[in-house]
Picture 1 (cartoon, rainbow, N blue to C red):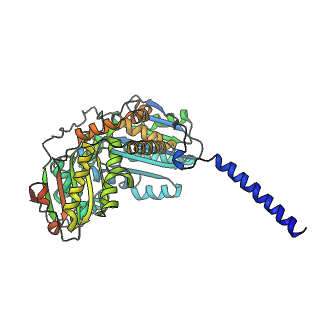
Picture 2: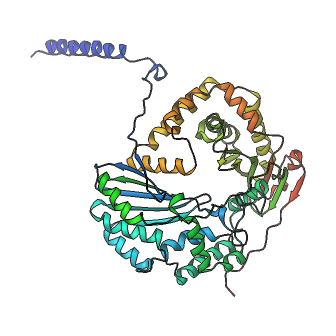
Length: 483
């Protein structure tokens, strides 16, 4: 082949490639923003709900993709139900309920058997609930389910494990003033709710030393009752066979018949508005500012979700992060949101900044909060927030285990049966005006609790600019040793 002919063929190939590329480019939008996608349609399997004669609610969802079964039981029994003179009881009960074993097996023996089965059984108590969970291969379900039921129904609360947990809690108390961030979170809770309020209080050394085995037994009895319990099960099982197993194991579990403990409602006059300083010799100052938040059943909940994303929950798109961190470089850690709870959550803005910039950081945070009240958010902001929250919703339900656990949690907290079905529609229906309205209703930039943990004396903008300044003196560290 001559060189001239080779060049001609090469030119033809190059020309065809250009034509092909051009034709392909004609089908591609000139900018990613021009891409259009069909509206997201979320579909997921819904678990079956069954109620036993003793009141135990069960959610069942078969999934035979992998030979694993997961279970999750939740009851009302968290730290907010601690007796006032025995703070820390829920925490100790949740730990020793598992580590203390059962009348037939010690906790260590249960650990050894579960390790051989590559299974798990765990218990924990949080602020508003007590939980017990398990995970196992389907072939070992009967044995693990029996161990799981024994831990729930017949915990032994052995004295050696109580003492071990007691020492752990005493050591936590001794070290509770070591970390400025933990100090800030704790003291901010005291300021917003009140130091003796169940939503903020923390155990003292005398509280922990007073806890007895009988206290744990009674707290477990009051908390773990079938008429207050929800059991979620997902995985490789037959619905009918699983239901028979649960009836056999939990069917004789008797309700106590006692009325469940009710808490006093949180008062609006609890927050101590003004500036509060905890002095620590650190280069960084931990800042907390805010006030009471909303109930999780507040009708403004969906507008608040979007407000939170735009204000401080939306990663680098959030206004607090864009301004305080990216634009001004005042803080590496900064976020904020209106929290919710069974009664009232807390609106909290958090930042860590240099001592010299403490006042400026507070000033800018307040300006951003005020801006949410004064101005409509942009169409771009609300569109981005909705898209992100919709995507998050999808990934909450990407497994059978996640689905049944979510159903159990939603019922535990009293959400309506159609909450999930209407979630996306309610989110999409929120307008820019709705967000501004809830900002004006639930954000109070003129009535903030402001807390600074560190040494803000060198701040170029004095904290007195934001209100009356008072100092908080921390209690001295309490010794670990028991008498």
